[in-house]
Amino acid sequence: MEFLAESRWLLLSGTIVSLRVFALSFCLAAIFALLLGVLRQSRTTAIRWAVTCWVEFFRGISTVVLLFWLYFALPFLGVSLSAEVSAVVGLGLVHGAYGSEVVRGAMQAVSRDQWEAAIALGYTRHQTLLGIILPQAFVAMLPPIGNSLVLLLKGTSIASIITVPELTFQSTLVVTRTLAVVPIFTCVLLIYYFVAVAAVHLVRAVEVRAGRWRPQVMSSN
Amino acid sequence: MFELSFALSILPKLLSAALTTLFVTFASFLLSLLLGVPLALLRRTRFVFISTITTVIVDFIRCTPLLVQLFFFYFALPGFGIRISAIGTGLLAFSLHYGCYMSEVYRAGLDAVPRGQWDACTALCLSRAQSYFSVILPQAVASVIPAAGVYLIHMFKETPLLASISVVEIMFVSSEIGANTFRYLEPITLCGLLFLLMSIFAAALIRVVEKIYGKRWRRVWS
Image (cartoon, rainbow over all chains, first blue to last red; front, side):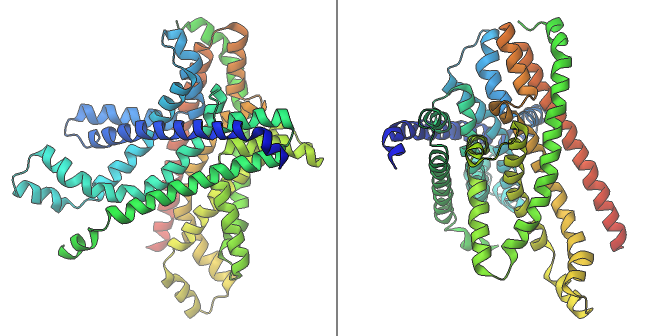
Protein backbone atom coordinates (compact mmCIF):
# COMPACT_ATOMS: atom_id res chain seq x y z
CA MET A 1 0.00 0.00 0.00
CA GLU A 2 2.99 2.32 0.16
CA PHE A 3 2.55 3.30 -3.47
CA LEU A 4 -0.72 4.90 -2.38
CA ALA A 5 0.91 6.97 0.35
CA GLU A 6 2.84 9.13 -2.07
CA SER A 7 0.44 9.12 -4.95
CA ARG A 8 -2.93 9.44 -3.28
CA TRP A 9 -3.04 13.24 -3.53
CA LEU A 10 -2.38 13.13 -7.24
CA LEU A 11 -5.08 10.52 -7.70
CA LEU A 12 -7.47 12.46 -5.49
CA SER A 13 -6.95 15.72 -7.36
CA GLY A 14 -7.35 13.77 -10.61
CA THR A 15 -10.63 12.35 -9.38
CA ILE A 16 -11.87 15.83 -8.51
CA VAL A 17 -10.97 17.19 -11.94
CA SER A 18 -12.64 14.16 -13.56
CA LEU A 19 -15.81 14.74 -11.56
CA ARG A 20 -15.76 18.42 -12.47
CA VAL A 21 -15.42 17.67 -16.19
CA PHE A 22 -18.13 15.03 -15.81
CA ALA A 23 -20.57 17.40 -14.09
CA LEU A 24 -19.95 20.38 -16.38
CA SER A 25 -20.14 18.37 -19.59
CA PHE A 26 -23.28 16.68 -18.32
CA CYS A 27 -24.95 20.07 -17.80
CA LEU A 28 -23.89 21.23 -21.26
CA ALA A 29 -25.01 17.95 -22.85
CA ALA A 30 -28.38 18.12 -21.06
CA ILE A 31 -29.01 21.63 -22.38
CA PHE A 32 -28.05 20.62 -25.93
CA ALA A 33 -30.09 17.42 -25.73
CA LEU A 34 -33.26 19.17 -24.57
CA LEU A 35 -32.92 21.95 -27.11
CA LEU A 36 -32.14 19.66 -30.05
CA GLY A 37 -34.70 17.05 -29.02
CA VAL A 38 -37.49 19.63 -28.84
CA LEU A 39 -36.42 21.47 -32.00
CA ARG A 40 -36.40 18.19 -33.89
CA GLN A 41 -40.16 18.07 -33.39
CA SER A 42 -40.51 21.58 -34.80
CA ARG A 43 -43.19 22.24 -37.40
CA THR A 44 -40.73 24.19 -39.58
CA THR A 45 -39.03 21.84 -42.04
CA ALA A 46 -35.85 23.94 -42.25
CA ILE A 47 -35.31 23.78 -38.48
CA ARG A 48 -35.93 20.02 -38.44
CA TRP A 49 -33.42 19.60 -41.24
CA ALA A 50 -30.75 21.75 -39.62
CA VAL A 51 -31.13 19.95 -36.29
CA THR A 52 -30.96 16.54 -37.95
CA CYS A 53 -27.73 17.51 -39.74
CA TRP A 54 -26.23 18.86 -36.50
CA VAL A 55 -27.12 15.70 -34.58
CA GLU A 56 -25.86 13.34 -37.30
CA PHE A 57 -22.63 15.33 -37.54
CA PHE A 58 -21.82 15.09 -33.85
CA ARG A 59 -22.97 11.49 -33.58
CA GLY A 60 -20.79 10.54 -36.52
CA ILE A 61 -17.65 12.32 -35.37
CA SER A 62 -15.08 10.67 -33.11
CA THR A 63 -14.94 12.24 -29.63
CA VAL A 64 -11.17 11.82 -29.45
CA VAL A 65 -10.65 13.64 -32.73
CA LEU A 66 -13.14 16.36 -31.78
CA LEU A 67 -11.37 17.12 -28.49
CA PHE A 68 -8.03 17.13 -30.27
CA TRP A 69 -9.43 19.45 -32.91
CA LEU A 70 -10.89 21.87 -30.36
CA TYR A 71 -7.64 22.02 -28.43
CA PHE A 72 -4.99 21.94 -31.17
CA ALA A 73 -6.65 23.08 -34.40
CA LEU A 74 -9.14 25.70 -33.24
CA PRO A 75 -6.40 28.15 -32.10
CA PHE A 76 -5.34 28.36 -35.77
CA LEU A 77 -8.79 29.78 -36.50
CA GLY A 78 -8.28 32.37 -33.78
CA VAL A 79 -10.18 30.72 -30.90
CA SER A 80 -8.06 29.47 -28.00
CA LEU A 81 -9.77 27.37 -25.37
CA SER A 82 -8.09 25.95 -22.29
CA ALA A 83 -7.71 22.16 -22.21
CA GLU A 84 -10.50 21.67 -19.70
CA VAL A 85 -12.90 23.97 -21.55
CA SER A 86 -12.22 22.14 -24.82
CA ALA A 87 -12.91 18.83 -23.09
CA VAL A 88 -16.19 20.06 -21.57
CA VAL A 89 -17.35 21.63 -24.84
CA GLY A 90 -16.39 18.58 -26.92
CA LEU A 91 -18.00 16.07 -24.59
CA GLY A 92 -21.06 18.32 -24.24
CA LEU A 93 -21.50 18.56 -28.03
CA VAL A 94 -21.14 14.83 -28.68
CA HIS A 95 -23.22 13.61 -25.75
CA GLY A 96 -25.78 16.36 -26.32
CA ALA A 97 -26.32 14.93 -29.80
CA TYR A 98 -26.68 11.41 -28.38
CA GLY A 99 -29.00 12.71 -25.67
CA SER A 100 -31.26 14.48 -28.16
CA GLU A 101 -32.28 11.04 -29.42
CA VAL A 102 -33.22 10.09 -25.86
CA VAL A 103 -35.30 13.26 -25.51
CA ARG A 104 -36.97 12.68 -28.87
CA GLY A 105 -37.78 9.06 -28.06
CA ALA A 106 -39.20 10.03 -24.67
CA MET A 107 -41.35 12.78 -26.17
CA GLN A 108 -42.72 10.42 -28.77
CA ALA A 109 -43.50 7.91 -26.02
CA VAL A 110 -45.93 10.41 -24.47
CA SER A 111 -49.34 9.43 -25.76
CA ARG A 112 -50.87 11.57 -28.53
CA ASP A 113 -54.00 11.84 -26.40
CA GLN A 114 -52.09 14.18 -24.13
CA TRP A 115 -51.60 16.63 -27.03
CA GLU A 116 -55.25 16.35 -27.97
CA ALA A 117 -56.42 16.80 -24.39
CA ALA A 118 -54.23 19.92 -24.11
CA ILE A 119 -55.74 21.34 -27.31
CA ALA A 120 -59.23 20.56 -26.02
CA LEU A 121 -58.39 22.45 -22.81
CA GLY A 122 -57.20 25.44 -24.83
CA TYR A 123 -53.49 25.27 -23.96
CA THR A 124 -51.05 26.96 -26.33
CA ARG A 125 -48.34 24.86 -27.95
CA HIS A 126 -45.68 26.17 -25.56
CA GLN A 127 -47.81 25.53 -22.52
CA THR A 128 -48.51 22.00 -23.70
CA LEU A 129 -44.86 21.33 -24.35
CA LEU A 130 -43.52 22.74 -21.08
CA GLY A 131 -46.38 21.91 -18.75
CA ILE A 132 -47.67 18.61 -20.06
CA ILE A 133 -45.41 16.79 -22.49
CA LEU A 134 -41.90 17.39 -21.10
CA PRO A 135 -42.72 16.53 -17.46
CA GLN A 136 -44.13 13.20 -18.59
CA ALA A 137 -41.32 12.63 -21.07
CA PHE A 138 -38.79 13.31 -18.28
CA VAL A 139 -39.75 10.06 -16.52
CA ALA A 140 -39.28 8.10 -19.74
CA MET A 141 -35.86 9.73 -20.27
CA LEU A 142 -34.41 8.57 -16.97
CA PRO A 143 -33.60 4.89 -17.70
CA PRO A 144 -31.54 5.72 -20.84
CA ILE A 145 -29.92 8.65 -18.98
CA GLY A 146 -28.34 6.15 -16.58
CA ASN A 147 -26.57 4.50 -19.53
CA SER A 148 -25.57 7.83 -21.04
CA LEU A 149 -24.04 8.93 -17.74
CA VAL A 150 -21.76 5.88 -17.71
CA LEU A 151 -20.76 6.58 -21.32
CA LEU A 152 -20.04 10.22 -20.46
CA LEU A 153 -18.01 9.27 -17.40
CA LYS A 154 -15.92 6.93 -19.52
CA GLY A 155 -15.64 9.72 -22.07
CA THR A 156 -14.01 12.06 -19.54
CA SER A 157 -10.92 9.84 -19.62
CA ILE A 158 -10.38 11.02 -23.21
CA ALA A 159 -9.67 14.50 -21.80
CA SER A 160 -6.33 13.12 -20.59
CA ILE A 161 -5.16 13.05 -24.23
CA ILE A 162 -5.41 16.85 -24.42
CA THR A 163 -3.52 17.19 -21.10
CA VAL A 164 -6.46 17.86 -18.77
CA PRO A 165 -5.06 16.77 -15.38
CA GLU A 166 -7.88 14.33 -14.65
CA LEU A 167 -7.76 10.84 -13.19
CA THR A 168 -6.40 8.97 -16.22
CA PHE A 169 -3.77 11.64 -16.86
CA GLN A 170 -2.61 11.66 -13.21
CA SER A 171 -2.55 7.87 -13.08
CA THR A 172 -0.15 7.65 -16.03
CA LEU A 173 2.08 10.22 -14.30
CA VAL A 174 2.00 8.24 -11.07
CA VAL A 175 2.71 5.00 -12.90
CA THR A 176 5.73 6.36 -14.71
CA ARG A 177 7.06 7.63 -11.37
CA THR A 178 6.33 4.70 -9.05
CA LEU A 179 6.26 1.85 -11.62
CA ALA A 180 3.46 0.27 -9.58
CA VAL A 181 1.49 -0.45 -12.75
CA VAL A 182 -1.08 -3.01 -11.67
CA PRO A 183 -2.06 -1.56 -8.27
CA ILE A 184 -2.39 2.02 -9.55
CA PHE A 185 -4.43 1.18 -12.62
CA THR A 186 -6.60 -1.26 -10.64
CA CYS A 187 -7.21 1.51 -8.15
CA VAL A 188 -8.13 3.94 -10.95
CA LEU A 189 -10.45 1.43 -12.62
CA LEU A 190 -12.17 0.88 -9.26
CA ILE A 191 -12.63 4.62 -8.77
CA TYR A 192 -14.26 4.91 -12.20
CA TYR A 193 -16.41 1.87 -11.45
CA PHE A 194 -17.68 3.23 -8.14
CA VAL A 195 -18.45 6.65 -9.60
CA ALA A 196 -20.36 4.95 -12.43
CA VAL A 197 -22.31 2.74 -10.02
CA ALA A 198 -23.09 5.77 -7.82
CA ALA A 199 -24.32 7.74 -10.85
CA VAL A 200 -26.54 4.87 -11.99
CA HIS A 201 -28.02 4.48 -8.50
CA LEU A 202 -28.64 8.21 -8.26
CA VAL A 203 -30.57 8.15 -11.52
CA ARG A 204 -32.55 5.14 -10.33
CA ALA A 205 -33.47 7.01 -7.13
CA VAL A 206 -34.62 10.00 -9.16
CA GLU A 207 -36.56 7.61 -11.38
CA VAL A 208 -38.46 6.17 -8.42
CA ARG A 209 -39.26 9.63 -7.11
CA ALA A 210 -40.18 11.17 -10.48
CA GLY A 211 -42.29 8.19 -11.47
CA ARG A 212 -44.29 8.05 -8.24
CA TRP A 213 -47.43 9.55 -9.80
CA ARG A 214 -47.25 7.28 -12.80
CA PRO A 215 -49.54 4.38 -11.79
CA GLN A 216 -52.43 6.78 -11.21
CA VAL A 217 -52.04 8.24 -14.68
CA MET A 218 -51.87 4.76 -16.18
CA SER A 219 -55.02 3.60 -14.41
CA SER A 220 -57.02 6.62 -15.50
CA ASN A 221 -56.21 5.87 -19.14
CA MET B 1 -6.06 29.45 -42.21
CA PHE B 2 -6.98 26.24 -43.96
CA GLU B 3 -4.69 25.60 -46.93
CA LEU B 4 -6.07 23.18 -49.46
CA SER B 5 -2.76 22.38 -51.17
CA PHE B 6 -1.14 21.39 -47.87
CA ALA B 7 -4.21 19.34 -46.96
CA LEU B 8 -4.04 17.50 -50.30
CA SER B 9 -0.31 16.84 -49.89
CA ILE B 10 -0.80 15.03 -46.56
CA LEU B 11 -3.92 13.15 -47.63
CA PRO B 12 -2.08 10.05 -48.97
CA LYS B 13 -0.26 9.61 -45.65
CA LEU B 14 -3.53 9.78 -43.74
CA LEU B 15 -5.26 7.37 -46.10
CA SER B 16 -2.54 4.77 -45.69
CA ALA B 17 -2.83 5.13 -41.91
CA ALA B 18 -6.58 4.67 -42.30
CA LEU B 19 -5.85 1.08 -43.35
CA THR B 20 -4.48 0.38 -39.86
CA THR B 21 -7.58 1.94 -38.33
CA LEU B 22 -9.85 -0.22 -40.47
CA PHE B 23 -7.81 -3.34 -39.75
CA VAL B 24 -7.98 -2.80 -35.98
CA THR B 25 -11.69 -2.01 -36.14
CA PHE B 26 -12.70 -5.07 -38.11
CA ALA B 27 -10.29 -7.47 -36.43
CA SER B 28 -11.36 -6.49 -32.95
CA PHE B 29 -15.02 -6.43 -34.00
CA LEU B 30 -14.75 -10.05 -35.15
CA LEU B 31 -12.91 -11.03 -31.97
CA SER B 32 -15.50 -9.31 -29.80
CA LEU B 33 -18.32 -11.04 -31.69
CA LEU B 34 -16.66 -14.34 -30.85
CA LEU B 35 -15.81 -13.45 -27.25
CA GLY B 36 -19.37 -12.29 -26.62
CA VAL B 37 -20.74 -15.81 -27.17
CA PRO B 38 -19.06 -17.59 -24.25
CA LEU B 39 -19.66 -14.59 -21.99
CA ALA B 40 -23.37 -14.54 -22.84
CA LEU B 41 -23.65 -18.29 -22.33
CA LEU B 42 -21.76 -18.14 -19.01
CA ARG B 43 -24.22 -15.51 -17.80
CA ARG B 44 -27.12 -17.76 -18.72
CA THR B 45 -25.84 -20.94 -17.07
CA ARG B 46 -27.79 -22.51 -14.26
CA PHE B 47 -24.75 -22.37 -11.94
CA VAL B 48 -25.41 -19.23 -9.95
CA PHE B 49 -21.79 -18.83 -8.87
CA ILE B 50 -20.44 -18.76 -12.43
CA SER B 51 -23.15 -16.48 -13.74
CA THR B 52 -22.66 -14.03 -10.85
CA ILE B 53 -18.91 -13.84 -11.36
CA THR B 54 -19.36 -13.31 -15.09
CA THR B 55 -21.94 -10.59 -14.49
CA VAL B 56 -19.62 -8.72 -12.12
CA ILE B 57 -16.68 -8.91 -14.52
CA VAL B 58 -18.74 -7.86 -17.55
CA ASP B 59 -20.27 -4.93 -15.63
CA PHE B 60 -16.89 -3.84 -14.35
CA ILE B 61 -15.35 -3.82 -17.81
CA ARG B 62 -18.34 -2.01 -19.28
CA CYS B 63 -18.32 0.68 -16.59
CA THR B 64 -14.64 1.60 -16.83
CA PRO B 65 -12.95 3.65 -19.56
CA LEU B 66 -11.39 1.83 -22.49
CA LEU B 67 -8.43 4.21 -22.37
CA VAL B 68 -7.46 3.13 -18.85
CA GLN B 69 -7.86 -0.52 -19.86
CA LEU B 70 -5.57 0.13 -22.83
CA PHE B 71 -2.94 1.66 -20.53
CA PHE B 72 -3.38 -1.21 -18.10
CA PHE B 73 -2.60 -3.84 -20.72
CA TYR B 74 0.09 -1.75 -22.40
CA PHE B 75 2.06 -1.16 -19.22
CA ALA B 76 1.18 -4.23 -17.15
CA LEU B 77 1.58 -7.09 -19.61
CA PRO B 78 5.37 -6.71 -20.08
CA GLY B 79 5.66 -6.99 -16.29
CA PHE B 80 4.20 -10.49 -16.54
CA GLY B 81 6.66 -11.39 -19.27
CA ILE B 82 4.08 -11.04 -22.04
CA ARG B 83 5.48 -8.90 -24.83
CA ILE B 84 3.05 -8.06 -27.59
CA SER B 85 3.08 -5.19 -30.05
CA ALA B 86 1.07 -2.01 -29.47
CA ILE B 87 -1.44 -3.12 -32.11
CA GLY B 88 -1.78 -6.48 -30.36
CA THR B 89 -2.45 -4.72 -27.07
CA GLY B 90 -5.03 -2.57 -28.82
CA LEU B 91 -6.76 -5.60 -30.30
CA LEU B 92 -6.79 -7.29 -26.89
CA ALA B 93 -8.27 -4.30 -25.04
CA PHE B 94 -10.80 -3.45 -27.75
CA SER B 95 -12.06 -7.00 -28.18
CA LEU B 96 -12.32 -7.52 -24.43
CA HIS B 97 -14.18 -4.25 -23.87
CA TYR B 98 -16.58 -4.70 -26.74
CA GLY B 99 -16.86 -8.46 -26.18
CA CYS B 100 -18.56 -7.56 -22.91
CA TYR B 101 -20.92 -5.22 -24.75
CA MET B 102 -21.61 -7.93 -27.33
CA SER B 103 -22.45 -10.46 -24.63
CA GLU B 104 -25.16 -8.05 -23.44
CA VAL B 105 -26.39 -7.72 -27.02
CA TYR B 106 -26.61 -11.50 -27.40
CA ARG B 107 -28.38 -11.82 -24.07
CA ALA B 108 -30.95 -9.21 -25.06
CA GLY B 109 -31.34 -10.93 -28.43
CA LEU B 110 -31.97 -14.31 -26.82
CA ASP B 111 -34.40 -12.80 -24.33
CA ALA B 112 -36.27 -11.10 -27.18
CA VAL B 113 -37.24 -14.47 -28.69
CA PRO B 114 -40.76 -15.19 -27.37
CA ARG B 115 -41.06 -17.99 -24.80
CA GLY B 116 -43.60 -19.64 -27.02
CA GLN B 117 -40.80 -20.58 -29.42
CA TRP B 118 -39.12 -22.65 -26.70
CA ASP B 119 -42.43 -24.28 -25.83
CA ALA B 120 -43.00 -25.09 -29.50
CA CYS B 121 -39.53 -26.69 -29.65
CA THR B 122 -40.39 -28.83 -26.66
CA ALA B 123 -43.70 -29.80 -28.26
CA LEU B 124 -41.86 -30.79 -31.46
CA CYS B 125 -39.39 -32.91 -29.45
CA LEU B 126 -36.35 -30.92 -30.63
CA SER B 127 -33.20 -31.37 -28.56
CA ARG B 128 -31.74 -28.36 -26.75
CA ALA B 129 -29.01 -27.99 -29.37
CA GLN B 130 -31.49 -28.34 -32.22
CA SER B 131 -33.82 -25.73 -30.81
CA TYR B 132 -30.90 -23.35 -30.20
CA PHE B 133 -29.40 -23.64 -33.66
CA SER B 134 -32.41 -24.00 -35.91
CA VAL B 135 -35.07 -22.01 -34.07
CA ILE B 136 -33.83 -19.62 -31.39
CA LEU B 137 -30.50 -18.31 -32.70
CA PRO B 138 -31.65 -17.39 -36.23
CA GLN B 139 -34.42 -15.29 -34.68
CA ALA B 140 -32.11 -13.77 -32.08
CA VAL B 141 -29.70 -12.66 -34.82
CA ALA B 142 -32.39 -10.42 -36.31
CA SER B 143 -32.35 -8.23 -33.22
CA VAL B 144 -28.59 -8.60 -32.72
CA ILE B 145 -27.60 -7.12 -36.10
CA PRO B 146 -28.68 -3.50 -35.48
CA ALA B 147 -27.15 -3.40 -31.99
CA ALA B 148 -23.91 -4.99 -33.18
CA GLY B 149 -23.79 -2.41 -35.95
CA VAL B 150 -24.03 0.40 -33.43
CA TYR B 151 -21.09 -1.03 -31.49
CA LEU B 152 -19.05 -1.49 -34.67
CA ILE B 153 -19.37 2.25 -35.29
CA HIS B 154 -18.65 3.08 -31.64
CA MET B 155 -15.56 0.93 -31.83
CA PHE B 156 -14.42 2.59 -35.02
CA LYS B 157 -14.81 6.02 -33.45
CA GLU B 158 -12.75 4.97 -30.42
CA THR B 159 -9.77 3.68 -32.42
CA PRO B 160 -7.99 7.08 -32.20
CA LEU B 161 -7.38 6.17 -28.54
CA LEU B 162 -4.76 3.79 -29.90
CA ALA B 163 -2.62 6.80 -30.81
CA SER B 164 -1.92 7.20 -27.09
CA ILE B 165 -0.20 3.81 -27.01
CA SER B 166 1.70 4.75 -30.18
CA VAL B 167 -0.16 2.66 -32.75
CA VAL B 168 0.38 4.36 -36.09
CA GLU B 169 -3.20 5.09 -37.13
CA ILE B 170 -4.90 8.21 -38.56
CA MET B 171 -4.90 10.21 -35.33
CA PHE B 172 -1.27 9.38 -34.59
CA VAL B 173 -0.13 10.32 -38.08
CA SER B 174 -2.09 13.58 -38.15
CA SER B 175 -0.81 14.75 -34.78
CA GLU B 176 2.70 13.80 -35.88
CA ILE B 177 2.31 15.89 -39.02
CA GLY B 178 1.00 18.70 -36.82
CA ALA B 179 3.99 18.49 -34.51
CA ASN B 180 6.48 18.44 -37.39
CA THR B 181 5.02 21.27 -39.44
CA PHE B 182 3.42 23.32 -36.63
CA ARG B 183 0.18 23.19 -38.57
CA TYR B 184 -2.51 21.32 -36.73
CA LEU B 185 -5.57 22.69 -38.48
CA GLU B 186 -5.32 20.77 -41.77
CA PRO B 187 -4.27 17.31 -40.55
CA ILE B 188 -6.74 17.16 -37.67
CA THR B 189 -9.61 18.56 -39.71
CA LEU B 190 -8.90 15.95 -42.40
CA CYS B 191 -8.68 13.27 -39.75
CA GLY B 192 -12.08 14.29 -38.39
CA LEU B 193 -13.61 14.38 -41.87
CA LEU B 194 -12.24 10.92 -42.68
CA PHE B 195 -13.79 9.53 -39.51
CA LEU B 196 -17.08 11.28 -40.20
CA LEU B 197 -17.27 10.01 -43.78
CA MET B 198 -16.37 6.46 -42.83
CA SER B 199 -18.82 6.28 -39.94
CA ILE B 200 -21.68 7.69 -42.03
CA PHE B 201 -20.81 5.19 -44.76
CA ALA B 202 -20.71 2.33 -42.23
CA ALA B 203 -24.07 3.38 -40.78
CA ALA B 204 -25.60 3.26 -44.26
CA LEU B 205 -24.03 -0.14 -44.89
CA ILE B 206 -25.44 -1.55 -41.65
CA ARG B 207 -28.90 -0.30 -42.55
CA VAL B 208 -28.64 -2.23 -45.83
CA VAL B 209 -27.52 -5.44 -44.09
CA GLU B 210 -30.38 -5.06 -41.62
CA LYS B 211 -32.86 -4.68 -44.44
CA ILE B 212 -31.56 -7.70 -46.37
CA TYR B 213 -31.58 -9.94 -43.32
CA GLY B 214 -35.02 -8.71 -42.26
CA LYS B 215 -36.41 -9.37 -45.72
CA ARG B 216 -35.01 -12.90 -45.81
CA TRP B 217 -36.71 -13.74 -42.55
CA ARG B 218 -40.00 -12.24 -43.49
CA ARG B 219 -39.98 -14.50 -46.55
CA VAL B 220 -39.36 -17.54 -44.36
CA TRP B 221 -42.19 -16.59 -42.06
CA SER B 222 -44.81 -16.07 -44.79
